[in-house]
Image (cartoon, rainbow, N blue to C red; front, side, top):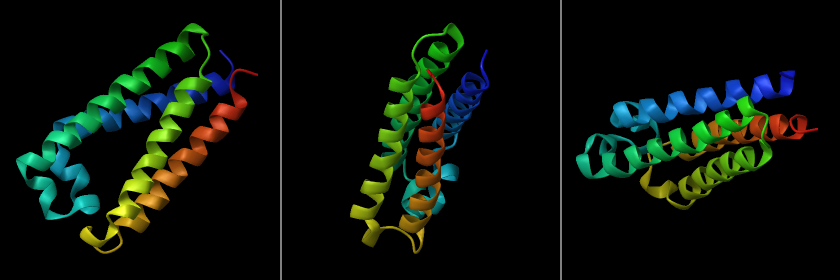
Length: 124
């Protein structure tokens, strides 16, 4: 397996772990992002849905990377998710805790850039 595919596997594996953690402990993972509402059951419903999508999407990418199938479409979908997190946080920044939108930009932006780097390197 090429180093780029190994990097893709690591990337996808980390995102699967994040999704699983978001399903298991949504309030804990989202507290800095959403503040106290993250502990409310109605807020945990979409957070768990987000976690499930992270798991499913990145499990598909991991399966593709391990099988030799094209990986770029999975990476592109992952980047789209990161960009949607940035956009949604920017749009709702007035209702978020101080610094949450900037932190989302930093974390999701770094994730998107890392994913783009992996996408550029893989499938060549």
